[in-house]
Structure formats: structure tokens, C-alpha cells
Amino acid sequence: MIGYFFALLPLYILVYLPLRHMFFGSPEDLSNQNVVTYNSSLIASDEPLSCPAHSYNTFILSHEPLIIYIEGFLSAAESKHLLEISEDKFEPSTVTSGTEEDVSIRKDIRLSEVAMLDRDDVVRCIEHRARDFQGWRPNLHIERLRTQRYGTGGYYTHHYDWSGGSGRTQNRVSTFNVYVLGDCEGGGTQFPRISMPETGRGRWCEFLECKDDEEGEEGEEKMGVTFRPITGNAIFWENLGPDGNGYEETWHAGLPVLSGTKVGLNIWSWGPARRK
Ligand SMILES: O=C(O)CCC(=O)C(=O)O
Ligand SMILES: [Fe+2]
Image (cartoon, rainbow, N blue to C red; front, side, top):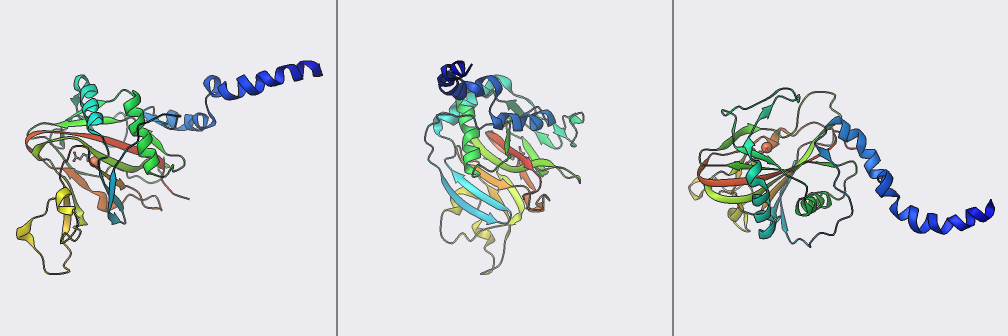
């Protein structure tokens, strides 16, 4: 009996232990199952991956709520790939009042098309990047990635990405609004309740709409920022404060595209509504 044990021990160590996750899922997978049941479009994206090195620059726009501008979040090849895999999947965008049953097309609120992306290696590496960016925050799950295309006249009126309602245990804790294609006039992403940074120095006027004719008094706070849709760049923001309440300052809109095409990529991370 003891002889069998020692004979099988190397098999256990060399074969079973390294491969056990293939059969039973990793501990992380198991802990995710609750979340997957809760909403079937939630996915974990922390499987081991070999992803190309990324090279983006980050600029903090606001600390509370945290808003970070990311230059070069996607490479040119990634943007091109996302456009290609989206092309035959676009469907009219819908809005929801919170429940999965109550989904409708409302062109007065949102005029665009959405494509749910298949999780190929490029997509999985983008999910992975989004998790890394957030410091491997525990219990964070990336919602299935989707692109959103606006033609001339397309828009998305002001809204929050988080859902209200008391007693929510899970919510969209953060958003990456990534510009996959910014081949358009107009179509900026506007946050009317965020104050404009000082633009006298630095690079903000490359990324934000800066109106020269609206120079305020020195030190006067100007409310509202509009991000220009620049291919490959992204805005990251946190939707919830530490107490789990949604930030009212994250109220935002995709302004009308005056001409051309804009394609965005939504990366929403779900997590516990309250941070411990
Ligand atoms: O297209 C934009 O600029 C904003 C998109 C957006 O807010 C959303 O899809 O939730
Ligand atoms: Fe949004």
C-alpha cells in the first residue's frame, strides 16, 4: 500500500498538480462562478496569457472621481483588428432601465450600433491590460467587450455607466472608454460636471476641446470637459466612490458625430459595490 503511494507520488507532483486547473478550473475560476451566474456576460480575464508589451502614457485629469487619460492604450494593429472583427457583428444599440428584460431601441437616447466581440487572443490581451491597469484589484470581472459605432448624426445622450438602486452588491466599478476609430468631426465624449484642467501648459489641449474664446478669469473654474475622439487613446474613470455610491460627476455623453465615423470600445469592470 505504502509502496503504491510512493510510486504514484511523482505522477501526482509532475502531472496532476500542474494540469489540475485544466480539469477542475483554477481557484479563481471557481470563485468567479457566482458572478458568472449573476450575469452571464461577466467574464474573468486573468488566465495566463502571453501578451505583447504595451506602451501607453497616462495623465491624471481628476482625483475624485479618479479620471485618467491614456494615450496609446491600443496599438494601431489592435485598433485595426477590433474594427475587422466587429464589422459583421454590429447591431442597433439598446438602452436598459436596469433589468435584463427591459431592453429597447431608443434612438432619442442613443443612436449607434454595438458589436459584442469574440474573445480571441487580441481581445483577451486587452481585457488583461485593463485588469493590470487597475492594479489586479480583487474580485474584479471584465464585462464582455463591445465596440460601438456612430455614423454621421450618431450620439449617446448623457447618462451614468453605473446603475443606481439601493442594495446593489455588484456594479460597474470602472469604465474604459477607448477610441478605436476617431475618423470624424464632433463626437467628443463630454463630462459637463468635471472641471477643465489648467491648459496654459502641458498637453491637455491635444486631448480635450479647448476654446480660446472662453478664457475665464485667472483661477476661475470652468466646468465641463470634452475629450476628442483620438484613435487608440482612452479615458479611464471610476464610477463608484469607496462607499459604493455612484459618482454624479461621471455623468457623460457621446456628442453627435457631425461627419465621419467614430468607433469606441467599452471596457466595464464589475466588482463589489463597496470597497473594504
Ligand atoms: O461614445 C462616447 O463618447 C461615449 C460612449 C458611452 O458613454 C457609453 O457607451 O457608455
Ligand atoms: Fe457611458
